[in-house]
Image 1 (tube, one colour):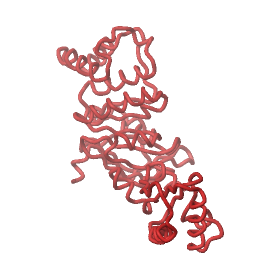
Image 2 (image 1 turned 120 degrees about the vertical axis):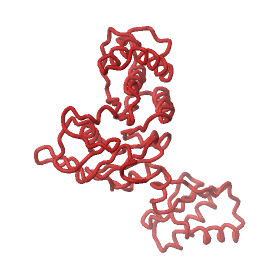
Image 3 (image 1 turned 60 degrees about the vertical axis):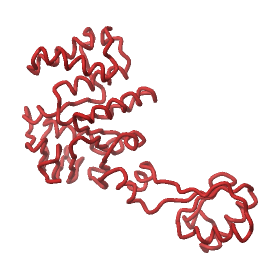
Image 4 (image 1 turned 90 degrees about the horizontal axis):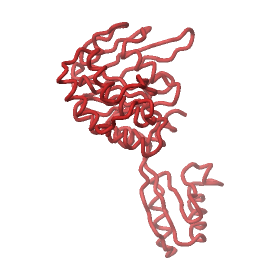
Length: 313
């Protein structure tokens, strides 16, 4: 993919507040029609990056391009390509959802017929099509859903969502995630979050931001494959066999304790986790030679949480 085909392109972005350097040479490429996870712990610089993309701040160095056009500080023209959902959206609480979307369409000079048809389409998408109550009585989840509808109103090329699920219960989170997956059919989504299970659930690609730098970027499968191998879990029927196998592996790795070797660990009384696949032949031979009954030998896939914790150490 050429540089001009990326919906969002960030090059060598740096931003400081006084003597505190928040972004340290961020480079990011977001392809079209994807849900792109922008991941990092609180304070990593995610919100600062998004404000720079929206032209609400000036960068110390670096350039940002949205749909091939350069972002400039202030009333940047590139915002016509962007829909934005902040972490805590604010509304005129006396309005109904339909009135609010009509108001937003009018101030952005949309055609009245388009406002009406688009509002009906989006309110149905976010599950508020039959909602006639005023916004002041809405739950947090309902406000987030309305925020997505508002952000998609003018058919943006890029939808930026800043921690949209962070304060929701499990049902509310699932509803928002399902809506974002459906919205991918018509736009690209930059999904900023620190909830790694959400990223694993809906994102096509991701970037990990840590201490102002992108330290990992790619598809979810690519990111997972960068971790050093996958562990194996062995579950035996009897605790005494598990103890024997555990001692054997410790002796094999010339370690007094498995924890110090870092190559195996206990997971309950009958389970052993092999952190290196090279130990499997010795383990299987020991099981066979001693006629040890086992329940399962299973590969443990890496999770994004594993990778995240390993990467930021």
